[in-house]
Length: 449
Image 1 (cartoon, rainbow, N blue to C red):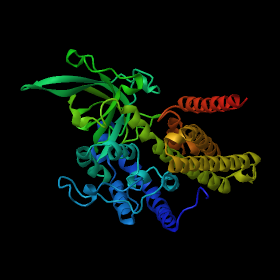
Image 2: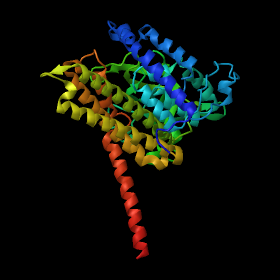
Image 3: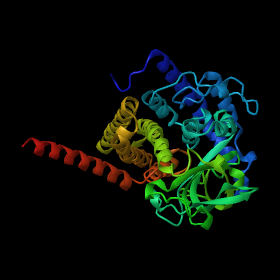
Image 4: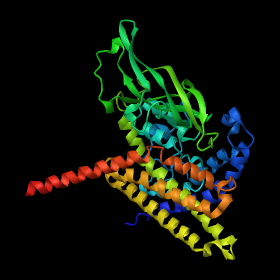
């Protein structure tokens, strides 16, 4: 089967999405930027700072059946049948897609920075919703999912910390201290959350109402001393809590871009009291949750990166056809021809590598596709980065100014080599898997001698 083959139904969805992105999302980008222009400081993180085009695009996506396309399987009945009286009914996607099918649609959404949010398919919300759907209690799902699935609120995932190398998640220092509180004749379990996080994407957004936090279990208090300490990888827990309990320290910029009104933040978690209802899946399940969140999420990131690179490539082609130097159009110069050819090769390689990974997840699950997931996380941002850099070079001075999306694309793509784990961590994973396979093969050969 071709990795790019779609059923007639999914092909129709793809065609509709392409039309929506090209005719509505891309033109709205100027409106988005103009709305934020002139706003400084705190004014960039208010409800008024959210451009009206966002809600307009969301409403249009719902009408077109382009809403919540990331969902991998049917929603619990209480979210869609109106039985959850405390929250609105959720709109289901037109069709539930495989990772490969959705990956192809992600490439299209990657061609406009507004498209993922317009379709309620943007990070970190998709990963957080998947965690709550897969691991959350019914009460957690009823409390947080309806408003997220309807695009009324947003969320953040708090993992990276400023004081440790968070690419090794065992370094995480944020503590979830377990204590016992006297309640009548019995003791009640409580948890106290303390720590610092940064690069908390979405935490600056005034619509962010819920956060998921990765923390290390702390059993050091005297009344919890009988609790068995967990292993290094079993010491982490994910908790869900309202954003109102989190203290914003400052917004962070990415190569000077603040990505308002969504943005990234440094935050403080200061003595936040929680109970068992805040734990997702229970104590010590943090790594299991984090890994289940990242497999499909990397397909989404990488295919959007392919889409972004493809848009920059299209701009490069357009520029080369209309600009002239030394008596020739740009495309007539050998150097430009080489840039075009190399870029086309890189985009095709990135696309097929990612779709191959998506198909492997569909067929065998994310655990058995760990090597492919690591490969795309290294290869695709690097390939896309080369394409964007060539497009900037062909544009000359225009490539580095705000008149084109190229400079923003370069900043975002360079960041992706660090976000969700730096290249070096994923290369380590690939190497260890390859060595393990080689040792197994050697042992099999030796056993037959």
